[in-house]
Length: 286
Ligand code: SF4
Ligand code: SF4
Image 1 (cartoon, helix red, strand yellow):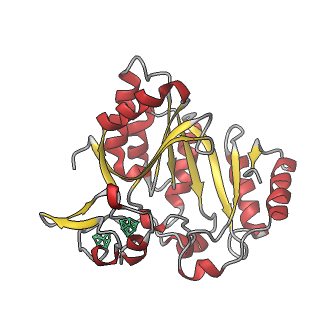
Image 2: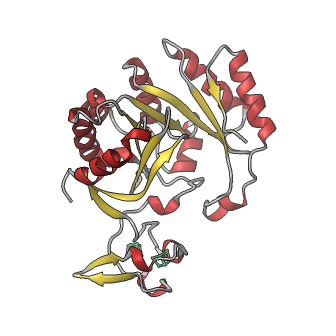
């Protein structure tokens, strides 16, 4: 795979929850976190072509060709049995797409779109692809009005962000927890880079939204919300904040037993942030 290609788990040709306006969303395969609360755990791993998923496919949509897993979408019934069979949370249905493929899709849909968001997995694991894609969009006279956004866990370092800053219009950064030990427990990674990324992007005028997922008994404590408030206040200008509530849909293992967050808690926390003069604060629609 060269820098003009990336493994794509899914493409939405329109979405109104992945940044401003109506957006095409690319979900790239592979993540550098391993979050207990991940709603799409099959986007975490990178397929190693082991073949373990082939026998579970009821429609023979999967096969081995030249030592590589081959997926035939024509036979797929979207049963997801292969996702459950994969030992490394990869997705045999992920397809490699080139910059030219995505440009063609954007041309087909551009009349209805405000922009594109590259999400994941963790989008920034495919930084060279993002740079090539965003540059090509900016250089195309029929697409250059589209805004180019990244949805990220913020684990990318400073040099990485600087390499795409000039071709990126906005970034949504998800901070999974402010307490270092809690973040490590939930994601198996440290949070220092995520916090630094949010600050760096905000100072550069590129942080579109700071996102925080409230998980009952884990990230909904007063201490965590106070830390969120303190971080937002430490920024040199207001930041848009998005609060999300934990849901069990799609999550694995012990997290599937965690309770969902009650909407009242989400509403009350949003009000608390606004009383602290933060905002705008948004929560999902019912
Ligand atoms: S989701 Fe598709 S490829 Fe995967 S097991 Fe089901 S039919 Fe086969
Ligand atoms: S998706 Fe998983 S099980 Fe299937 S070939 Fe790739 S690594 Fe093996």
